[in-house]
Image 1 (cartoon, rainbow, N blue to C red):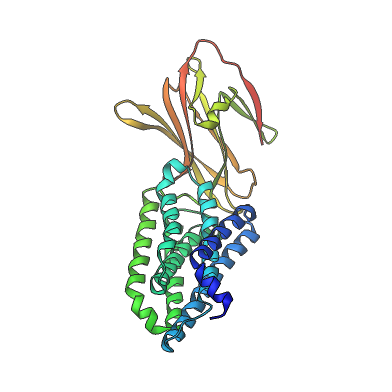
Image 2: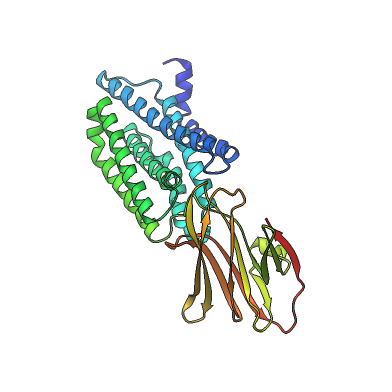
Length: 358
């Protein structure tokens, strides 16, 4: 074995990890808007490159097995596969995090992290084939869940089901390609691949219908609470209490309201160009016996394309003293952002500042 290949094989585990981390680092600097043509080109390129490298490695490994040898480029091609999948998952993690309240979607994000970390335990090629193919299926489904709404211009349960159908179709074609390149190796592992893909498909659907899957491609651009909001010359003039710096570090914000005074919740939600959907503000009050109780649900339509997000606000009349939160989400129940606060009744108006929300 040439010295270069011997060194590469000796550091295979480290090279695999570095390749995946490299994908994360690159994407953190590279990605902006999810609907930007360059972003879509990079994601599609990663997906195609991952599929091609998996097929390439599978073909030459199958030929090497027939000759009772080994494919000497195996480690390098595996690292290339890991880079492509790492790039995809870093992008998904970036965009899914932008599209959700972490306190709601943490199970899904935790699963993603677990998949990435478990890569180090799949050393043998047969296991790696199963793992990379199933990981490719998950990446393909994750890609379809936001590219389909961008293409059709809306998002709802029907578009999610279309995303799933497109995923199954493309994945079936991919398995057919792998079978053409090395039938015996595919048939040896087809049971494991099927179980893995079906399990992933079911879990992602459960995450969606239990409102855990982030509502990508939507993303929270801004959120705030104010004593008064009015529209002035295309902007929003908001009057409210200064935001304490401690709120940025997790302290619950206190809103001081006089008797009969309403409260305004403002949100700016980014959506891709031409995408039309509805955003919902769910005002919830914490009852000591019942827990969080939805007091009012107010929906309004949004149209995508604005860099700073589509703006809107809702009003809650006479909120009583106590713990509150407003969930900003979709009609089907998925949460994009959440703002929690505590209402305190006062007899005098607190100090106010005026902000123009552009």
